[in-house]
Length: 52
Image (cartoon, rainbow, N blue to C red):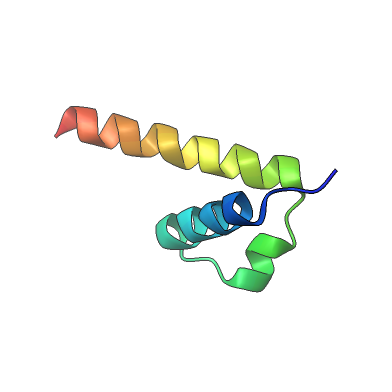
């Protein structure tokens, strides 16, 4: 099974934007870890927008 290229690019952009990590660092992550980071970022963004 392959992972959709568009979805992969979305995850990379999301993590890079919020964590300021480089492409190689993000691509070195396992799929499950990358998904976990995107979920954590989403939770942080949601909490921050609720406060302010």
